Length: 302
Image 1 (cartoon, one colour):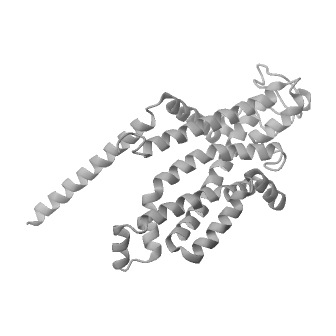
Image 2: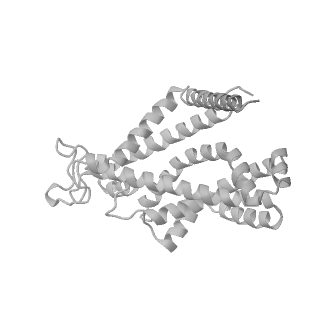
Image 3: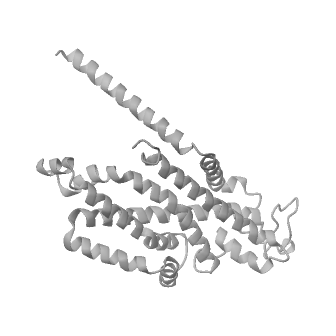
C-alpha cells in the first residue's frame, strides 16, 4: 500500500471519528433536554451563574457600605428589595452572595471529588489492607451526620470561604470513595486491564489512563447532584453563624440576618431563601437530566 493511500485512510478514519463524536454529542444534548423541566432548570442555573460572574458590574449599590439613614427600609424604587439593619441594599447583597454560595458549593464538590475518587480508586485497585483501612475510615465518617461533622470541623478550623469548602468537601467525599471503589473493582479484571499489566504498564498509568476515564460518567452525575446539597449545607451553617461570617454576604447569612425582621421587612429574609430553594431545585433537576442522558439503560438503548 502506498504512502498516499495510508494518508487517505488516516484522514478518513479521523473524519469518521469526528462524525461519531459529533453524533454522540447531539444525542447527549437531545437526551439531556428532552424534558422541559431540565431545560428550564439549566437556563435558570446559567442566569444565576452569569449574575455571580457579573456581580460587580450589575450591583446597584456597594453591598458592604452602610447607610444609617436608610436602614430597615422596605422595597422601593431606589432599593428594590429594601435595606438591612445597617442600611445596606439587600438586592446588592443577594447578587454578591450568589458568587460566594456558588464558589463554596462548586469548590467543595471538586475537593470531595478529587479526594474521594483518589482514595476510592486506590482502595478498589489494590484491595487487601489498603482497602480495609480506607473503607473503615470512610464508614466512620459516613455514620456521623453531615451537619454534625461540619459543625465540629467549623468549631476547629473556623468559617470562611476556603475553610467552608474544605469542610464540606471532607463531609461529602465518602460518596465518591464508595462509588469509585465499586467501579474499579468491576473494571480492574477486564481484559484490556490485564493486557495493560502484561505490557508492563505501571499501576498509576493503568488507573489514570484506563480505569479513571471509564468511570467518568457516574462521577459527573454525582458532582452535578451534589452541588445543590452542598450550597444548602453552606446556607444552613451560615444561618447558624458557623459558616460565612459578616460582613461577607452569602445567602445563608442574609436569611439569618433577616429573621429578626420578618414582620417589618419580610423580603429581607425571604428573597435569599427563595434564591436558595430555586437554585437547589434547579441543580437537582439538572443532575437528574445528566444522569438520564449518560445512562443508556434509562434512554432505552440497552
